[in-house]
Length: 169
Image 1 (tube, one colour):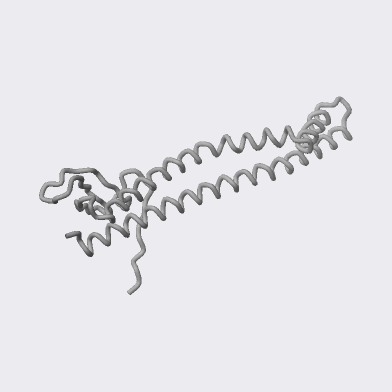
Image 2 (image 1 turned 120 degrees about the vertical axis):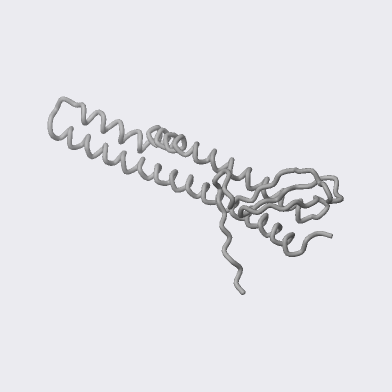
């Protein structure tokens, strides 16, 4: 029978996000107990079982990856501006941008304006490539972080399912 597809959310507070809380053990004869939750259902287990420890570790790893993803998303705009600045400072981008400004602001009419427009287009193409490359790189970083979140979530959920199918003694 095929394994059902897991629903995983990175939204805070979603029932489809594996979570845990440290709780009183009550009738469980362990020193430390955790309430493990996923999909709207929660169960309490002692941490003497390695599966509980792995669940907690994977949820912690997942939460750290979510924080890292938020930082990457916040830094994306800055990376694009840095890319533009570096392009303009570079020889080709800077030279074309300078030629564009000189050509477009020169008092002579036609030829200077045409050359200035061509230089502006060239600068846009050169810097556009740098911006596209930065966007692609930043998107890849975010995609890798989402994969890390998904992997940690899947592992945590697997540990919880194992605990549910074969409860500790």
